[in-house]
Image (cartoon, rainbow, N blue to C red; front, side, top):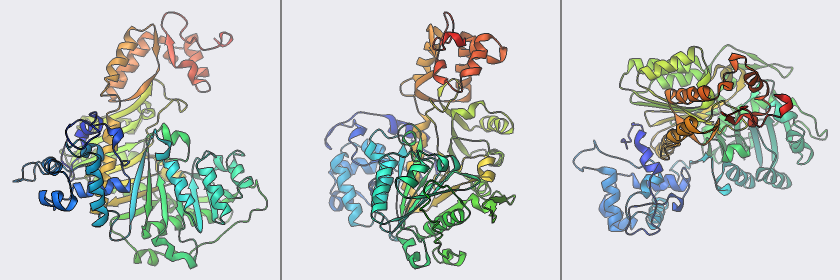
Length: 578
């Protein structure tokens, strides 16, 4: 593993993927990650890692004040500090998996570290800010972002403002909203047009729950909620205690248990609460009604959140950027464009500031300014370490950005795609749906914005920014996440096994499990073998089988998840359609 302090954790793979476990703190070095008592990115995890990484704590402190087993204290310090005469080999813990790998530091050790954290101000921080993150996919339904959001809603006392691109009207959130409405909580739901107009989603929110749903005339791509926020002038002081959920994940089952996503849970971030409430209020004021329930009234409650007020609570280590700055609301409920690119401009600035490392995880990467900024940063600084992990749908896209991606590889960047199919389709894609950038291991940009020109100039989006020592472990958890995604399928030698199957089987898979993260060259090799053994996939050759492939793939992708190399290739296609 490479050192923290601004260095990327390319080597985190060993810690993330290794090992089996002993249930005791004493004895074995081996580990079972299923026994780790806290979820990665949770407040408990962040606090435990903060204590483990505090180099002001020496053996005596860990032994006496924290109460660790002597060998746990010795092994923790040896791993973290290396040679005591130098800092060159320091190796701070990036996640709980890495700490769990320390001999004699298992459940009891973690409990002692957490107790010390709570007693000594590591849990949360002095400003009252609390943050955690849920990374999808989750196998335990109780640990999903949906469960955490539902718990937040259940704690609402006054108001809930939701801006959501996609929402499945299902539990646990549906019931949580119903309970909140029954308690008298004021709820507003700003949705993308498709969601708002859906009788089974937006319609049900209005008719069954009595929640007003409205839409905007641009793409409403946010995924955030503000609980008990500064909704009016009488409640401005609630900005200091408001709770926020925001990230890349929609409120759907796929976002919880299939896709790679991140959802932040924030409390006590006054500046962010003010900025996000103001953005919600701006969009709500410029929205259009969706009438499923005529008894609902347009609640235009709005606080006077000024730049001066936000400046009073300015935090240099956090910020929120919104594409709403690229638009102006019209009186008829539409929005005119101003020709600006406020969020992309900030991301480009961040990329160009990178001194040591740059890590990007994104479902989309078609923004020319962002791609060009990466090339420019690498050209100006040949020692800059760059890792970019994208969803497989990006692999087939051409144009200038494709050329820039080639340049990134030529300059030494590590570019890869998470793929589980020859031809991408949302119905079976296990999407890499993140939208985050890590600069020098100590700055994080994350939110709803896809890295595309359309997201900047035709959508309402957000990017949140975090830096500073109070966010070091949060940022480290994102570094661990991208390292984990970059290693999908590697430990199982899944790529080699897939290639062998493609080269020898009579019926070859065009969709595979598990998803594999592979370089452009590796994915091209996969496609070459598939096209050689299943010529029908070369639809541009205008064969009858190829024409069938093109004609029916979009509507019936599962007809084409395998190819029979011994006869007619598409055995699931009805005979009358061949």
